[in-house]
Length: 124
Image: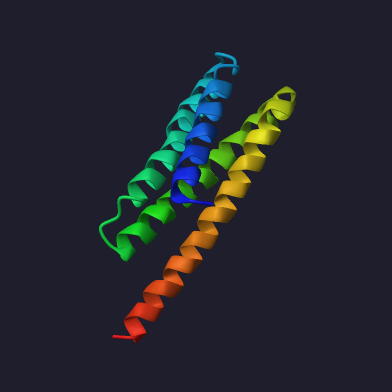
């Protein structure tokens, strides 16, 4: 998968998450969850985009770690919604699955970048 394809995939997922939040009731607990999801999901996409404009390998690695954290936070809030109201499970399952796949890609990228940074240090 190219960086451009991953940027699009993250953005499309973030949009799907934000659109899903429109289905949540206006109860106070759901308002809080909605706000968290509307921040964390797009943040994952935005931080990956920023990572691609990296200034250095370390900068790229740090931004990828932020992407991983934001994806994980979004997954937590999706789980939380199902715990509050199981009727949302059918809507959340594909969003959660995609977040899990994106997380696996990012974690793999983090591992690769760490190896490359370690190799470049030892070769100097």
